[in-house]
Image 1 (cartoon, rainbow, N blue to C red):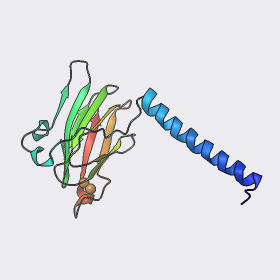
Image 2: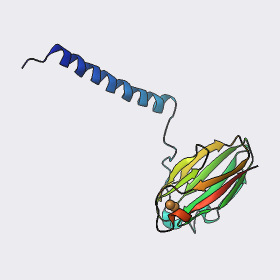
Image 3: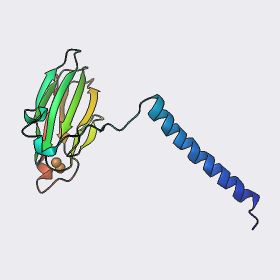
Image 4: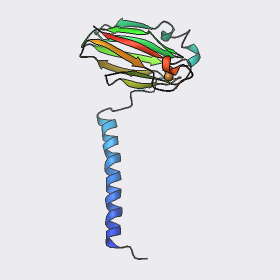
Length: 155
Ligand code: CUA
């Protein structure tokens, strides 16, 4: 069977593009440590409410000045429901769920992560503008999903 020269060029071109894209991903992951925000820390969902740091959700300031939010997304609320943080300060969110999949989206910011039972989602963000922001659950989690919201106050 004879393959036309144009066909060969397309095959080689497509293969080079795929190799290029995979190479770019490998480079970003290996060299620049790019990874999804939900990293691979796991937790037993049954212990979330009782035997873990998430039993008493809180907002605390770490030694390096970072504000740490230990938070829970559960049917059908966020704890703490109001999160107060200082402006222009790194805020590290550590979130998990004791029941089902939830979303944690802070409207008008680029915070938008899935809260997956069994995993701790962690992300660090600074908020450059003072104000009140709506926190929404954007993953359907049950009959009262639409009532699940919270508040972020940057002050
Ligand atoms: Cu929680 Cu939707």
